[in-house]
Length: 384
Image (cartoon, rainbow, N blue to C red):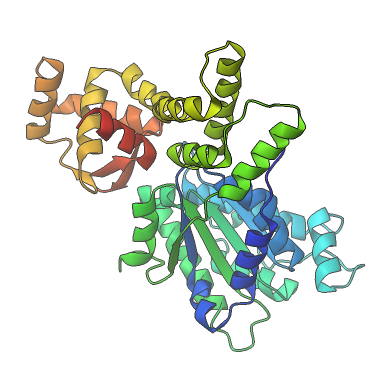
């Protein structure tokens, strides 16, 4: 397994701001949303650095990735993650409960948490609400509960997802304002679509309007130095300078996997005796890989067909949210692109395929966008 670049200082800072906010950070208890492009290390940071740090500071942490299975409703994914954690808390011998008891000084020989509802009915009609569930966890743990929702923007793509966000807001509003609450309910959402993540906190009709939205702190020159040093320690000599490597990393959108791939190609090129220095080769390799990183997603569109490419182009070229993609005018425009008449009823199945491939996402009734803004940028560069 590849070595993970740890960011303990960032994790400690963020955990401290969430769990022990100063005067200027009290707004984080209304919700914190971090946005950053895909494959920039968000999930790795959350799972290997932030979650352990939050747990070390005594919080009950529930993590769910809404892209883990895009065929399943975001609400169902969240409810399943909550049920799993509550089931662990109700099990006396579970590692989670043992760790929580040790950190928070709870009775080490006590029973598991006892809930006043059936776990399997959580979120179901007639069952306990998320607000009830989180309230009981906060009270029995005598501390904070942090729900981390990765790719949170997926929640607003369905009505059920929007209702789930409202349920989480209800949990926040039921727990946090209590004058003698032993802990708080904190929601941390991350997403790869900056505009949509910001919209979750900016639009009045969203559940978490007024919450804090920040850019995800991408990997910086410390990461680049770490990688170069590891390569030197293994005997690699044909390496770019720190400045050139950092520039290449920026070109690649601060994406670790692409950066490592670029360094691998640099070694392969150097071994063939190209005659060029690493600082000459690295920028060329990075520029090439920048486009190929998007090609994997764009190939999905090509495989669906010409009409899919025409629809994708209309969405990608739109400023903001694309609308009217099912209209007669849009069908005529698609027809001009692919060289045949396009019937309006042909559009929906193709859009469904694009949604299933996760290259487009539904932003609301009749509103669509490109799932990965990086892919959208590459497409626009190629199709001005």
